[in-house]
Image 1 (cartoon, rainbow, N blue to C red):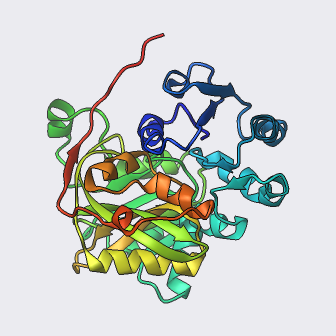
Image 2: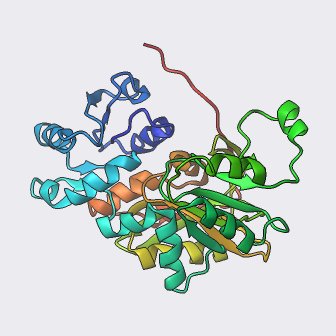
Length: 337
């Protein structure tokens, strides 16, 4: 498992340790990543953009008889995808989608355009690269009568995401909320974007309803399992409270998206309810999601199921049965060294 210092690493390690047949090796670019202190076998590796990254990981796998890699780091997905055949010649499988699918899923603007062309409903959107295009897009999407949001086409986490709303109470935000609000006035957005070159942005309608994260297992474009959980409370974009709810609309919608793109392995789909009451896509995480450990409480070990699928190990039907209605809360826990 790569990304031993990722926010969800401890939980995913917990999931994989549930099967005693698995000998787990963890690596990270940070020698003091939390994963180091949760497993017996830990390696420090170069960062994903380093020329020696793939060769370093490959050598570790060959030397230790490792036969499957579960990547947690988004930047590692493309290098691993391109190297799947090389690793496979040594009997090493990589739980990652093909490069073509990653190119669609990892670029939010390309994702929206692709799904729209495939007849799958997405939020109303515009793709912009210049300040005048941004101004026109905001107006065409109904602002100021309607809230509008924007985010970079390619970004990790919530970086660059903002909701444009001139009706926000800035005094209330200042004194009654932590300084991580995603709301911004139109004037402030124009001041910032109008005076700086900025990356390509996806400008879209704001979806005001409930937000769900859907943890899925895909087999080369076929959705084997989709488990929606409502994001009841979030901290810096990470779910800390939620509930597993069997919503057939969300399950069908997520399955169709996975099929059209051709995704593989553990996949996360983020959806939110529109003003019209339809759940529409926000984005895709073409990898295992950090909060996936919460599904253990609902009886589902999603990382382990994906590993079993890749290694063609038998899966009992009881392992696929979700205890719908299960709620969860998350908390921090320390390691000492």
